[in-house]
Amino acid sequence: MGMITHSFKRIVTAFALVVWVSLPAVADDARLDELFDQLKQADESTFQWIEDRIYEEWGKSGSPAMDLLLKRGQDAIAAGEPDAALEHFTALIDHAPDFATAYNARALAFHALGMYGPSIDDLRQAIVLNPRHFGALRGFGIMLEEIGREDDALEVYRLVQALHPMATEVAEAIARLESKYEGQAL
Image (cartoon, rainbow, N blue to C red; front, top):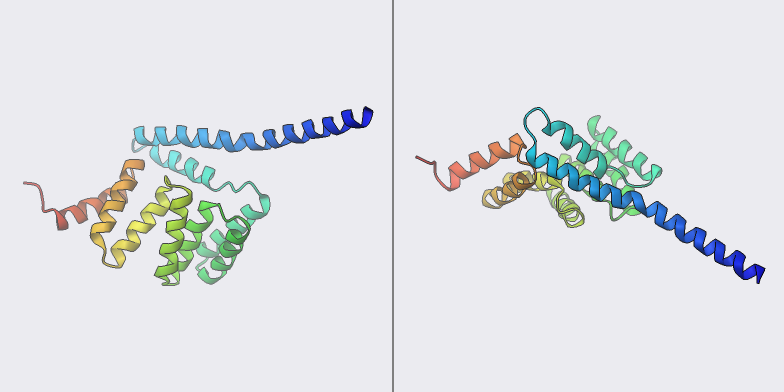
């Protein structure tokens, strides 16, 4: 009987540990929901702080090793080394295939290398994994505009604006494309 009790205690402990480890993920979703609500109400003085907090939440992979790969890739992009960044981001995706930020980051590296197809593919995957990823959506809009699909870019920019009303470069792109495709208001 003592052996059964000991095994049961192990199972309960393991279950409790799994539940405890899962709690931060739930809290992160709640935190993101709160931040998105704040972003919709933000003004010029607060939106950047909120946007930065959202990117911080999105940048949490849950693994120090994966966070290091992300940081190394971001540092390589900042240093103008997209080839090195591509290697780090690809390794990150290999080990964390459900991490939307990794796909968005690798899309930047592909874009910097002039590789539009793989960049668009990674942006698509980032959006599939995180439909509210306004950074990936913004990048997708930019790519669509660069390849001449301006009407599609306008639609994507409008999606970004619904998520992030203070994204000024998106508002400017919308105004520019609306005047081109829908005429100017009188």
